[in-house]
Image 1 (cartoon, helix red, strand yellow):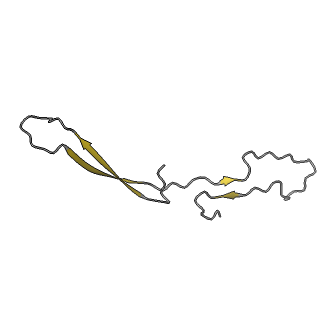
Image 2 (spheres, one colour):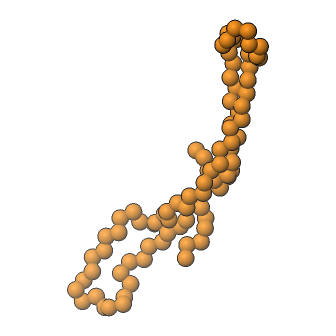
Image 3 (cartoon, helix red, strand yellow):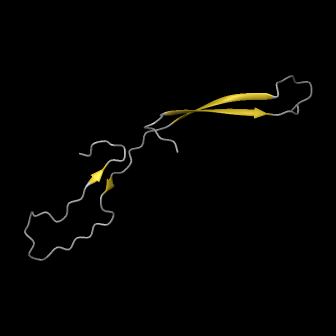
Length: 82
């Protein structure tokens, strides 16, 4: 897979070979190469949460302003989540 964090540009070399002539009277080599440069765009991946499903049961007498649930998240690119 292409990964912007490890390389933002990839160079691909294409090697074409054709031992048979394409046109009569045309002088060309039987081998040809071309280089293709691929630039990868950085995409910020979504944070990864410690829980996949958040299911909270709140009792009717729960105190207003109290913490219902604490969940941690991390950035797959190791950036700080604010």
